[in-house]
Amino acid sequence: MGAQDCIFCKIVDGSIPSTTVHEDDVCIAFNDLTPQAPTHILLIPKEHVDSLAKTEANHKQTLGHLLLSSAQIARDKGFADDGYRVVINTNGDGGQTVFHLHVHLLAGRQFIFPPG
Ligand code: 5GP
Ligand code: ZN
Image: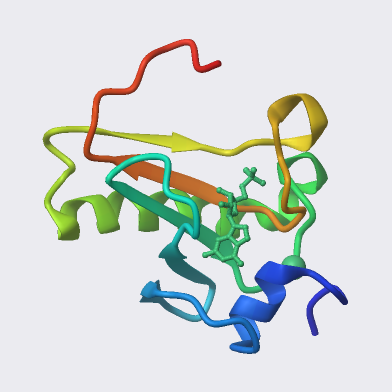
């Protein structure tokens, strides 16, 4: 069971629709509703975790899985060589707005650093 009233748990259980680009036993990846780049995919664990700030040693496999899945999606979709940006906004100063851990996978344009 996911956290009550968590929109990403509702995407996992299908009660909120999303455009799924990848799914396996650990995670689901779908297009962001408000894309900030030509490609903007969110990867989330199926298990609810509030944020990166709440992860512990038992999340090691999940965190590795999210990053490896990001790299695989980038290769599958053909933008790995051009490049991409992976972002995990965390808590207030990090700009996190949905409190279910997620990885932003952004591609299709040049990104600046440091981000705003
Ligand atoms: P955060 O700001 O927490 O790092 O990122 C949350 C992201 O979730 C935002 O980029 C926002 O556009 C996206 N988002 C919020 N609600 C929904 C939704 O219902 N469906 C999808 N696909 N994306 C969402
Ligand atoms: Zn959740």
